[in-house]
Length: 358
Picture (cartoon, rainbow, N blue to C red):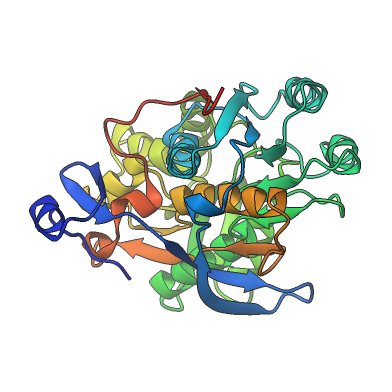
């Protein structure tokens, strides 16, 4: 695992660096990943990032996000933008405004195809709902990289993601360990039903707690807006007696820490996430949240760009499916992680368009 490196040390060594809150890291030439075979077997390796001098033109990549309402997707934007800039290619980003807006995302994707995008990076609102347009794109020789959320269409060109099933299992097993064999009641807030990543996390968490005395007493599914999740959790804490833990998607954990504090339940109700964003990381630092696995969001963005560029350059991918291996962030080890592997720098502003060579 990479440790924090001081900016002074990097400058002294003549290394390119990016910053987050005073910390910095050497510019990456590869990403540690797990390659996933068709039968699900995982192989740990390094994924080298394509050299700039191997790229023959400023390819135009269309990027589709479900929304940009939280820092998770800002981190995804950062990883993609930084890699697009490094490689001298071009990018246009569209965001649909939320997980209830599948029709908007489909219109945006159709526009990308009609306007002649060279490749597409797709953070899908629905794993099945985007299938027809993924097929339309790949039939037109436009490679489509499934990014973060999961796409079920077989013609999808590549998958740059971490399994939310694995993230759910990791969190479930952590909660079982915390229970220590005793009964424990969980309020579960995994995000919108029908979103592939959320449904996968639900399956993973349930498998992670199977056979234990951990009981899910309430589940609420819905959009990942902070206010939506805060309402869900606040109501659950009033309605259901004896909840010991709030567990959910990153925004739910952020909301959970607020709801627990507002209800005067600090020290009585614990909070955990199954993926991480800066507010959750800060809550772990402060002791308001116990833990969360990281899926190294910004590294996934770099990987997605590399996959689409290699396919556009006629190369064969090491594996059609790959992503960083999840690791649990806790109060004991949070200092050990390279921040910009997970998050955008604190001064980063969302970038919607990069036009190189135009």
